[in-house]
Length: 244
Image (cartoon, rainbow, N blue to C red):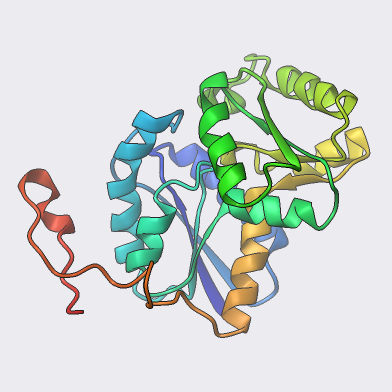
């Protein structure tokens, strides 16, 4: 039995509920999904500034999970992923990386459809980092993250329109570029007749695979445990205590 922790690094609990429900839909029998909301930080992550202040809450949630077998960071920016892998005692999966890897096995030309235009550049940087720059294009449907759940916001119509435009431009598969869209993938896939990939679901299956393979993060080089040292001010509780 695998216990997978899913951390929503923003502080909106209703979004965590949506993410957790979507994850349980695809989890294998015997997999326990524990979805938690960050205890500190922004209500939504939309750009570099929000991302920076979401990382402490994310790390705190990971460090509090003593019995998890793997973890997923449920923000499409893969918020704090490298820092998380450096301290978590279990493998940590980012939903952007998981979604792109999954989409890459289904199509050559991929469209990542995110929320606001300000999120395009951060996601383009991740697309390049993960080796998909020649295959994936990022666009935005101009919907604020919190509007995804707000009735009457017009979010669904804007998302549909952007997906249709991406397909007209030649996309063969769609990646939903926000964890808050996690419950929409199946419906959109049927509506548009192409694979629509939700990063939360993709990350669940990859986390399960890592647990089954008994693999965890390398401690050689890049993700070596951080050396013990003091941190000052309000960050003092986050000072690494590992003896390397």
